[in-house]
Length: 93
Image (cartoon, rainbow, N blue to C red; front, side, top):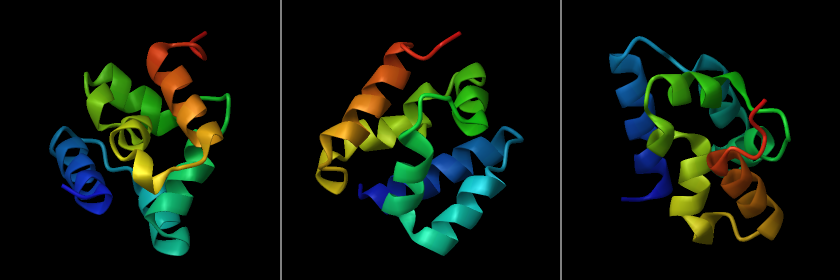
């Protein structure tokens, strides 16, 4: 599975549960998959999509999970650190 296939499956899974990540989809179209993910992941504030997927029990389908699953697409250690931190709950309030 490639990064784009993973993201497509994430959108499909989330949509099936009633959540359509339109903000991310628009960003993906505008910036491309990798840059859209980097823009959303590289912040200490969890994005609404992450929180929504987390509450839906879909943490393994988050953009942060994509960063960890496809490290070759995200070689910047900063991106990896943000993703790992969010997945581990470091930024939870």
